[in-house]
Amino acid sequence: MPFGLSTCPSTFMRYINAIFRHLISKSIVLPYMDDVVIPAANESQALEYLKIVLQVACDYGLEINFKKCQFLHNKIEFLGHIIENGRLFPSPSKTKAVINYPDLKNIKDVRRFLGLTGYFRKFLPSYSTIAKPLSDLLRKDSLFQFYAEQQTAFQKLKYLLSQQPVLSIFNQNSPTEIHTDASIDGLGAVLLQKSIHDNQFHPVFYMSKKTSDHERKYTSFELEVLAVVEALKKFRIYVLGTSFKIITDCDALVKTLSKKELNPRIARWALYLQEFNYTIEHRTGSKMAHVDALSRPPHCMLIQNSVHLQFLKAQQADDQITTIKTLLETTPHDNYIVKNKLLYKTVNGTDLLVVPDEMQANIIKTAHERGHFAVLRTQDLVSKDFYIPRLKDKVKKCIQNCVTCILTNRKRGKQDGTLNPIEKNDLPLHTFHLDHLGPLATTSKKYKHVFAVIDAFSKFTWLHPTRSMYAAEVISRLENQRHVFGNPARIITVLKDPHLLPPHLKITVKSKTSFIFPLQLVSQDLMAKF
Image (cartoon, rainbow, N blue to C red; front, side):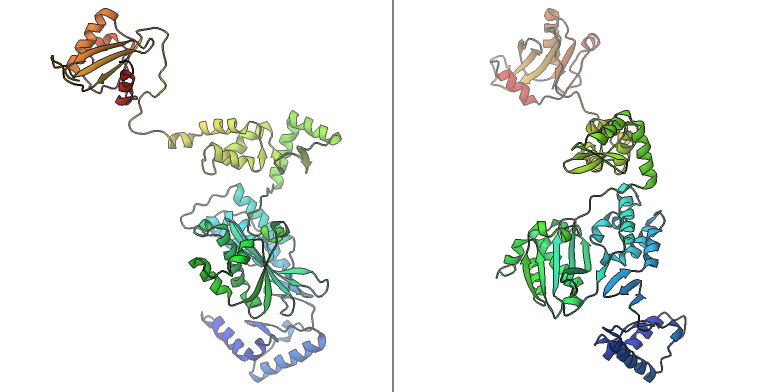
């Protein structure tokens, strides 16, 4: 093949598949580009298959570099995987690259890291839910914000691949089961087969998928069916044409799929399932913990060495924490536990790291600045991993002093007037409430309104008949009342006429005009006095 042409790889692969197509269909040879694997059950079968493959290569004039060949090996490395004795491992060279991967600085780093770890996702239970904080950064118009949640996912994926996970190689003649589960956060499934060596089921392939925004609105039953459909799409090349079991903790799934009338979405999925030869078996959730974890994001807290030392020094400097740790050495307690020299408090079955006083403000500030959340949201984020006494009060104090929140939430435009409740003074004639009642039936003197003045302290009421609600008549009545009772210190009114008060009354009275009372409420109060 000539070098440099973009279609060379695909052309070469098509040529190799055409040459070995009759051997590929019988699983005698597994080619990928210029790498060819010849699987066999024993040495004699391997020699027989090798002779067939070499003869085909000779017939078509293919040259073989024997220095790069390995014959009759029980362990080989192929496409980043180690194959040994019917088991599959990630290649140590690949996992080492993941373990030593540098910190993520931008979106490109996130994309590269997920591409590297995603290649081995079949080895990792709950991969999609663990990687969700990182994969969310790849969304369109998403900002690169690498907080504690993203750091936890980054470290968790590196840790899981460092544990050398193992899968079995699929055997078409072995009993096969697919275990599925679903939650609002994701779908999970595992393909298992019974081993002929220990008669136990071992994982062949893990599948996990993060639910989309649309799928998160599905009912729990629809999510369970979707988990089965997605699992069969993923494992199709293994289970199509064979009989297998689907194990689920959804009892309704077993009964509903056999009904004649289904909603359109379930009916479409049920039609797809008819392509497979399966039986559905229900098991309680307590017996499905291994697959239940695939669909739910794990609750974990990974502490890096530098952070661990920082917490350790701070706890050692805190007298109260030191006293509790000393007491625990002689007297165990149900609510406290020491792990890795750090003190934890058990709250509702979860061990929360006890935060020393000097670090509390920084922990709360970090949680709040993840999105400048309100009190309850910030409190939930902190209390998920840490224990801080009187947390709510400290969160409120942090938010009240947050400059970004103060500037963002500052009220703009017209400010509100004085709101309820209105303070009462201990003296009569200090505060007057003004209002009009009417229009009423017109009297012989053409009065049709009642102007009311109510003393806030004593509830004493002056009623003045008026012909209109204009300011001139209001001022006249207030003048008459001022000569007898004097000026009040404050007037509260729903009258919105800017010319209500005469000049000398504005000077001698500290007036507040408030519009907090609807007119009908004050009028109802007046009606009660008749």
